[in-house]
Structures are given as structure tokens and as C-alpha cells.
Amino acid sequence: MTTQTEITWITVSTDFGYRYRAVIQPPSWPCLLGQTDYPVWAFASKKSPSVFVGSGIHRRFSDSSVPMGRYKDPLFFQMAYESVSEPMAILPKQLIQIGPNNVTLDIYSDTPMSPADCTERYQILMTDKEDPLIHLSEQSDTPTLSEWTTAIASAQAAIKTGPLQKVVLSRKSSFRKTYADKGHPLYQGFADALLDTDSYHYFYQDNDKTIMGHSPEALFRAEGASVSVDVVAGTRASSETGSLLDSPKDINEHAIVLDHVCQILGTYGAVETGNCTELSLGTLTHLYQQVKAHVDPTHWAAIIRDLHPTPAIGGAPKQDANTLIARLETDARGWYGGLFGLSIDNTLDLAVAIRGICLTEDRCITQVGAGIVAASDPQQEWEELNRKLASVLGRIGHEITMTEGTSI
Image (cartoon, rainbow, N blue to C red):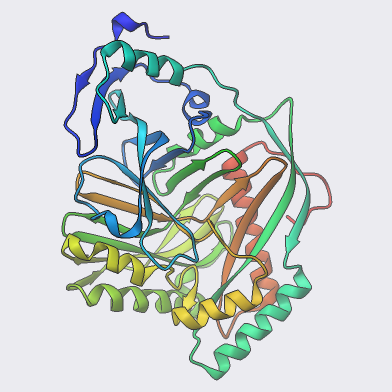
């Protein structure tokens, strides 16, 4: 533990109250993510050298009160799948930035703080926390394979009559969660996955749930007037031979998402599209393409509303797809397919919340989806869901064990 005399605090300019900064020793991940000053959140962007971890609500902002990109202070964003407005923003009470060269702690306050006050807050923050070991059993899937087959038939009937082109249907898998006496620690497991620079990493914890995941997809990334969107669609096991670039079904699924993104961004500026390539992420490979545009930051919120959810997670046309999803899926998606992200220094990064889990007191719930088009085969799409679920549990839990008889 760093002592009080070893910490030098400096005052940093801020748009909100008072902000104090110190360079600190790297804390443990249980210290960072096991806070009880809720909410706790963490975010790391693709290719980024830094991870941001915040805790404690300092201020919440309603949809219309946050001019995105205007503030230099970090704002953490979250948004449910069903939301029709821009994400809600949270300014932390304390923020830790883990960079390639040092670790900094920023403390926010509505009133002035002395160095001793700041150090006391730091010492509370750095108190050792438990890193839980989780055991999962008793898998239950909604829908079942039979129900899934029926849902796909309904979706394909809607596609045949138009105007629906594609819909992403999802399966929710729920497990009984217990604590184990051996295995890979949960918080350290999240940290180990940060080595993957081709994914976004998101974490959110409050007093009744923990959400964490590693997403390949950016809904929206902006730095000043430069904006980009990831188009990720089509999936196969990385171990399979052949290429998604030779699959008409996957090419069609990808093209639907690409057209939607280009049309929206094209409303606000000239669009540039990169080459379509295969993106390999561990056990899964996807078709990937980046779309760029130059857009005035005043349009960020409007673009996000127009984009979310893209056909990669919802379908096209958006309204028709969401109407069908609401009819065929029994529960609201909530965090799944929503957004987590960070705004700082005139930049904004929003990742689509997929490839994740939600832990409650006694359950682990994860949701995976598959894009359904006219050529989709129910059994093949079900197997794709199984591959995605195995990938999620492997990346999140590492040595999380499963009982025999599950559908993975």
C-alpha cells in the first residue's frame, strides 16, 4: 500500500466541480472491480493502450443534457437495446487510467478536498477485495431448439413477403451460479482478456448485477470530425476450412448491414468504406468492414439514434425487425445488444454489448444471436449460437466448469 507521504496530488481543470490527480502504484483487479461504491465500470477500446476504471455516480445526465464530445472529463455511457434515445452518461467519483507507462487516479468532488482527504479516499479505494471463483451448472435455454426452429420459420415467412430483409434472433442461456474453491478468478479473467486488442472490453457492476464482455463491434467511434462504424456480420468457427468471403449467405447478411450504415452516415457526410476482410477472434471468425465519414460533432447523438440497433444486432428495416423480435422473443433484451462506451477529450467510443454475461445473486445469464435471412438453416444457426456461447464463457470465465449434459 502506498503511504500518504508518497502521494502527490495536483489539481486538474474540470467541467464538473473539483478534480484531483495522483500517479499511483498499479492496484489489483479485485481492488478495481470489486468496489462497493456503485456503480463500478471499466472500458477499453480497440487498439487502445489504456484501460479506464471508474466507480461511484458523481452525476447522471439525461439524454438531452450532454453535448457529446464537448467535455474533456471522461463520461461513461450505457444504453439498453430497446432505448430510442442517446446513451445515458455517468461521471465517476473516482477514475483510474491504466496506461502503458503509469497509472493515474482522478478524484472528483463537489466541494474542495485537501491532500489528506484525497489520500484517505485512495486508501479506501485500494483496500483488498475478494476475487470470486464462479461455478456454472444447470443450463437452461430460451428458446429451445424446437421453439428456435419455429421462430426462424416465422422470420423467413416475413422476409419472403417483405419488406423485412434480415432479423437477428437471440437465445438466452441461464445457468445456476455458485462459488467454487478452485478455478480462474473472475476479475482477473476479465483483465487477462484485455490482451486482445481486436476487441472492446466492457464491465458494469451495481448492487444487484455484474455485466462484463468483450465485443468485436463498434457502433460508433469518433474523434473530432472523424467518425467510423464497424460492420461485423457472418460467422464461422475459426477451425473450419474455407472462407466467409466465398459464402453467398454470409456476404448477403454483411451487405445488408453495410448498406444500412452507409445510408445513415451518408446523410451527414461523405462516406469511405474499407475492404471487406475476415476478422478472427479466437474460436470465431466474422466478416469485417469499417465505414468512415467526416461529421460535425453536433450530429453525433442523432447518428447514434439512427444507427442503434444496426442490422448486425437487430435487423433491417429496423422497425420491422424490432417488431418481429418483440413478438418472437419473450423477454426484453436490456443490456444485450445495447451500448457501453466512453467519451473523453473530444472523442467518443461506443461498443455494442455482445459476447458478454450478466451475473446476479444466483444466476449467470448470457445471450447470443444469429442473423436470419432467407437462406438460413435452423440447425446451422443453432450450432452458431452454441459456438458463440462457448466463446463467451471461455473468454469470460476461462476455467469456469460446466456440468455434463449441457447443450454446448
